[in-house]
Length: 285
Ligand code: PLP
Image 1: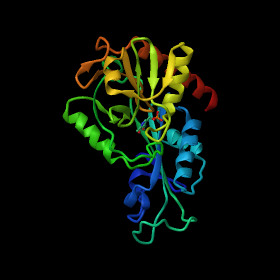
Image 2: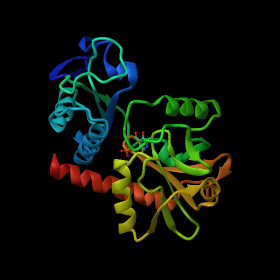
Image 3: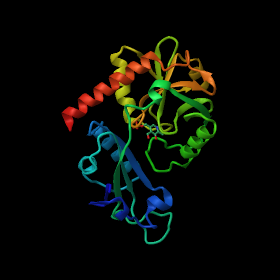
């Protein structure tokens, strides 16, 4: 039986229960992190903690815990070799449903669980992802990692219905990001373009390390929005996320990207990214 964490205790998944008056349940008044685990080690934990604390701060949710120890204990308890740790914090439980927040000293609801999943041996890395573009109709604070994920989930279902892997969302023809990944292209001139960090995208943890690796490969980097047309004309395209790591995109709205095969520079970035995070986690964990 899996072991999960809930409000200070490690219990079996079926024993972990939260209130129907929890603000996370009623208002998606909650933030979360997904941390990848490779070879039994948490990847980039410190950056996930920094982003979690930023998300909590932006929403004035008072919560603190030893996030790293919780995640590490779940890896150990569940003997997780490869997969993810999911960590969620809500503003806590109200006495009755009310838009107004409860008192600031209300205890937050903190829970976490581990899930086994193949991250490195993902067949998508060999065949590449097909994506379609759709309007980005999310709210304007996509920089906060909240559990308000219904629009992204609807878009993921549109992708499935269209027989592709995912959706890249766009505001006025400018691509923001994927349903749960940051989006990037490499132009015909070899310039890597990645949306600038602002309120339209989530500041991806994987994106940070990916950009470092791309710099080390001496790629020119432009942090700016790119249009749907620019993406279709690109030499290579790819996404980054904690679960997909660095993943090639080979088709956009039915147009082949480059020759329709995963890009060679993307493959190199993925390889170098993996080597770097594995090196770093073996020295910090
Ligand atoms: N953008 C969105 C909307 C996401 O949901 C995610 C991850 O869940 C990402 C980007 C990638 O972020 P990270 O690399 O930190 O996993």
